[in-house]
Length: 535
Image (spheres, helix red, strand yellow):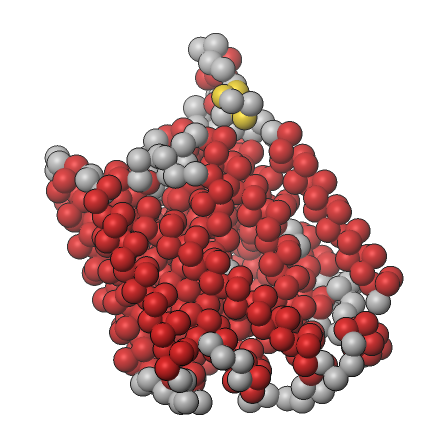
């Protein structure tokens, strides 16, 4: 597909130039490294919330979501129905620790709780995981651009990387957040326009189409199978993926860092809570598209289901729509890449450069260093992206599974840090290593779906870490200051206010807004039941 057309090129180029211009405008506000990491803590909560959503819902979701439900049906919605549960946990426990520290790296918590080795290990794991993640995102986006415009895939990789690193280097976290807001808007327009046109092109009315899809088992959101090898069931969705998303949103530097730019902890919580409300609706849209495409194409097989959206848009031939959809895909990719670059540069500076190389630099020096690290990581992520062009899709699958191995380790480290009286650094590192080996065994010799990796890895790592801590360092007399109980004790002893502006600032206390979010989760499930009954 190379006949892209001048109108489509105009739409795409306007979007790209707009991002760079915004980065240049925001660069005037970045005077120190702290501004680069978390801005001046003046960013409105709603913009941060949109940015968090845009980061997680990347190009793989725009293309892969419809492809997944095209194959598996609407039951895949349960993989993403658990956001309200995960967000309620994160805002009640995780965010208070990170925001109150005043430090841009979430791994600072591990040093305060356990020691420098724990911080360094998990920072390194984050950086290595993000190299693969960013390479995959670059490669996937480049393939799409090659398919649509005819640009060579390597050239497309370089173009996307250059644009993303340019505005990120200029504007720091502020550029990341505000370009993400624009990118989310473009993504939403592209998805809605595609949905409206698809419904209009269906051979039957929407009601008749849904009836036919229901008869084929494509609209049923409830898969009750207890088979652990099945990915999309209500058990993996409510149990396994709830734990997974607690880790993804709770201890992911890319996600948490932007909330640290909020004006207050209450605003940081509101940003995450807004994402908890929006995610379900967004995934209903993307997975619903895939189910409707199944009807539109008569269920015929595709060589690559990820290109279904693009083939439909190309077939419709609506003026400028391909430009909008292409911009939406590029936007989705850049919203993930800019976050990755900014967070990797932040962690490199704070957790390695300041700790081991330059401990007495000025804020201006660290700003310059962070910008150079941003550029350096952009160059690094291009290497695996280009390497993927000469390999099969199996490499991507293996990398995704290896990346999921570390989710359980993060869960154990931070979970024990928050709640265990007796966990020590030596025991924790042993537990993480054993948990990784256990997941390797599960992957090699057992038929277990990947959503369970976090729960299994976390369970093994936590159990081994606690036992090793007790055997090596003995039982502790009281909770560490950086546990939930330790924080509550600190607030009580110093007579500190547990609330500010109506929001709890002490970890472990649940706000009314979080209870409402859990009620929203129940309503989402009820809504799916009603949908199934009506269809």
